[in-house]
Length: 309
Image (cartoon, rainbow, N blue to C red; front, side, top):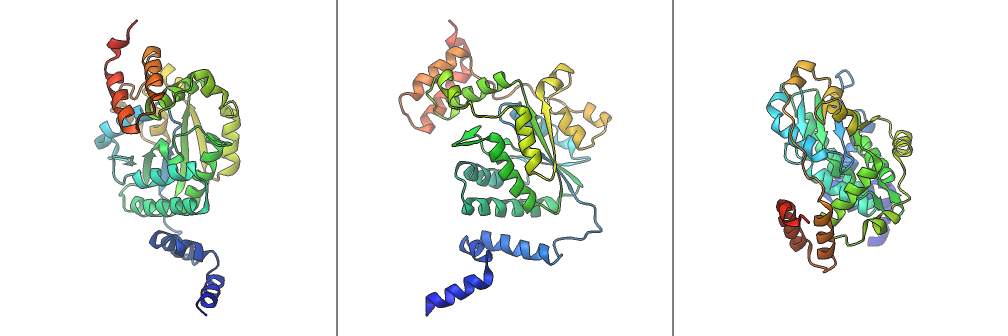
């Protein structure tokens, strides 16, 4: 009898049953979707709040840009709001859910990410300005290849779900790129330094030959997303002798006079020198825990002079 009742409830709710199985978060997603269908998610007479999402890619100066946003937050907040991992509303829950879904693509992780995005959107609506700059490259995960999916496939499915959850906003995705060879070497250095990789660069690169180039990746994102997607070569900004992140501020329509007050930050989270990198690769071969290898990596990065030949 009990099972028959459950079956009837499931048929009545349809996909809502999936959300309810996820508990309070899932029920919130289901309720939000019903409100949108009923036209109660917001007033159409109000201009849409604009979200400038800076979502990577990793190793394209993202840490430097985020440090600069934090350093200049008082200047920026005259005209726009800012959200990063350390600036409220924090992207922490969104990046955690996105990283988990990037590694394991299943329905529950997708729904949890959507729930996190909806909660994040509610926090954004409370901010005073009509434009918000959001910077976090790990919303789309930190791997450039997950199984058969490259970073462009992973990004397109995660950002598409983000669009769905934040449909009451005007979204613009800003993504920085760099010279492909330099980018791949920097990603390899990051994997050795922080993720315990012990492969040589040649071995690491061979398993990532399927990653599409920037032009192909841009097309994947544009084909799958409704929002505007802009790729910015970090070299273009650096060659113009402007600070990294200038295009992000221009996308938020900040005036040149306000941008002129902006104080840039030096490069952050830079790659290890070749000798340091080889030392960390050998450390990773020992199979130590993440906690220990991270401590070693910090010591290695802080003592470059010890590794001079």
